[in-house]
Image 1: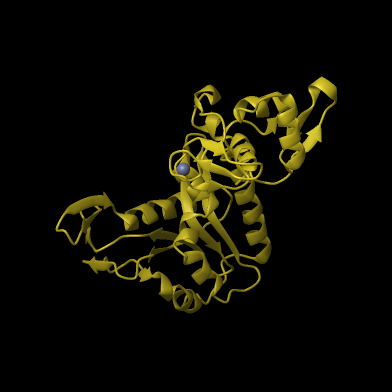
Image 2: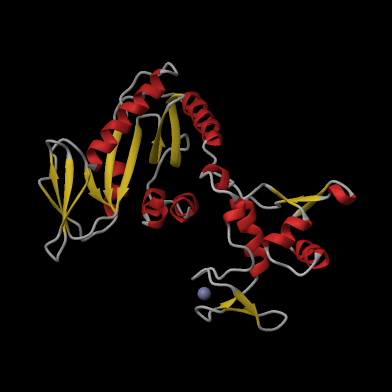
Length: 291
Ligand SMILES: [Zn+2]
């Protein structure tokens, strides 16, 4: 779950600081950038793209890899061997092969929408110290600091998409993301909410928090201080369990002493009240429960 949240939250390319390099590039206004895109070609086949750029001249898939020490490309069968400084070797999926399959998946997705073109691919190495051995000649691999120059240079003479087509594709891509909304995570991962730990938990080590005084809590396990643990707990509920909350659910999930405590905490949060008397429930006032 943490991995999934990490991908949705910061975004992998964002975490590797690749987004900021893309933003430094001068693009025409019609250009659209998407991150962590899920698309489907048939009910049973979906594919995921780290970063997708649509412009009038090209459609580009960017995959980001953070690899340390040396990597060697082996063409047949396609794989990557990572050679660590310790001398240990690790076999990894070939990122070029991954991008090539995503390119054909995306070409097919576009074809189903009446657009016939070949998408482009780019592999970006997030670590400036990655040494590459036996680089494939026919596929662009660059370090992240080279992104602005690479994209600026990438200006095919012909236009392949109109501004209207870009807008229409952007709409369809946005629409398809809804189906892949993984929140709440318990239903996405088939985990029973009853199996979740209750109470106020430390964000660092997940130990139980102990209240020290009215405004301060500390972790019994790692001794770190916690601020605003109630709102953290409410946010967890919306991410993990459900897109609404009643005061008794709040009381039980946060291990509060009674309903008054729950109602007080909800009144201090940014939750929005819906319904009346015993049917009262609350929904999130922010987009915390959505990607
Ligand atoms: Zn802790």
